Length: 317
Image 1: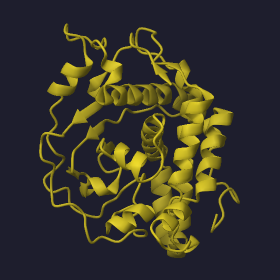
Image 2 (image 1 turned 90 degrees about the vertical axis):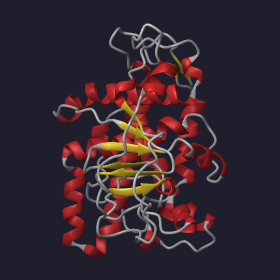
Image 3 (image 1 turned 90 degrees about the horizontal axis):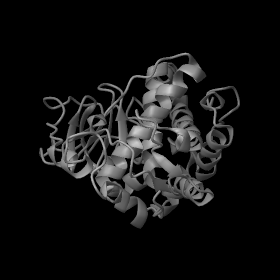
Image 4 (image 1 turned 180 degrees about the vertical axis):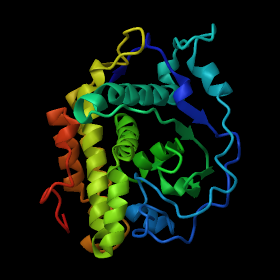
């Protein structure tokens, strides 16, 4: 995977809240699954079972609104000294700047692809980078939740130290794991724009016994959308026509598939020391997460990512 060191870095697509101290006291004590609480951490053990990657309605107040963002540092790191969006020297070697470029690529892809695939205009959503804890439109959250998308304020949230957990604790050390994570979360934003998330919540309320299965469908579709972005990533350019990614190799895609495999519900349940219980799945098995990422990548067509079609995803898969 090679990024273009001549491409523009648009830091306006992120909000850096790492110096603001976050908000609230975390979300300990809330249950996982059902009632719009998908993917919420209760303990470290349960976080390993079902708290990573998702769309979050944290079920709490925003504790006074989102944490204050200050992009001064990230602008200095990533932009040229003349203040333009052109990259600063060695910017692509910095974790912050690389992640901004990933976000730029993902959003540029959807700006072009969403109208073609779904006849819907794309609306940009910022990623808020935080440390330890943060206030969101969906409630207060801490780093234990992992990356998530909040439909109440249309933002992606991530503590970048999550990548260390992904590599050391979850067995997904590859560099491409990082843009895969972000592409999955922006897949949830696309679902929000298309009304898929709202329709899924209605279905959960109407059929509570199917709530976890509906959550699995939503998560697998986000994996598929991530694969579709990966297929088109090397064709995405900045406003001046510079490609953001110079290359993505088969090895990079395998890293994405490996990451999907390491965060399946069955794999996480086993890693947590428990037995596999399909009734508690909220994100899908390792095999299904890999399958749907591959479906998006092989087709390059997000319209092929209909996990809600009859029979596409079955209970216990």
